[in-house]
Image 1 (cartoon, protein in one colour):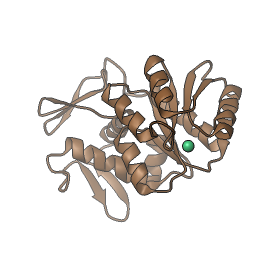
Image 2: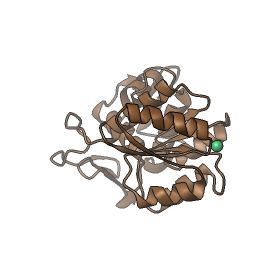
Image 3: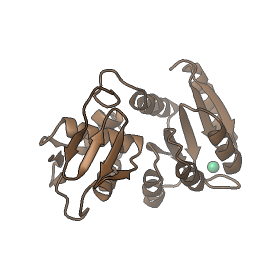
Image 4: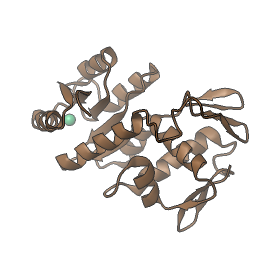
Length: 234
Ligand code: CA
């Protein structure tokens, strides 16, 4: 993780300073922006490995920043930090393309572990099928997935997936017909071994259904196994 630039958009100086110090100790190059407008400007102006984004920010809130940045096609991984307990914020953040979500107060060690986990997933991985250019495209129904370019088309139309949605899709594809619990998926796809929210998995599966199923209410590929978890049927 040496020398990787991380943008911290956080108006609480104590939190921002603590995060920056701990990230620096881990070998990252953190920079802090302390309001939404400045955060968005610096996000778009730089090549960041990751952005840590507070929701409650002066001038422009974090959800607005995230939406505007994603609308411009910027896919930098982002972990949303929020003091709000509201499920709405969490779902909204994930829908807008956040890769993970942490509720304040959080333990710095846990946050750093999540940063490392997100970066591990978003870096090109030689051991994983995803990201390799020599892996052929795969198909199910009218969905075509190209792991080399990480692009997905449905019925010939490009479907935009967030980094983690693609990772989850690829995990399902690589492990068809097997039932995975939410805990197992959090561990295998998110790299979260404890403390992860099972709702995160539900939200991501809902997004994949919305984007890739003909009828998200009657899925044929991303199936719920009652009491157990999820199963992918190609
Ligand atoms: Ca704040």
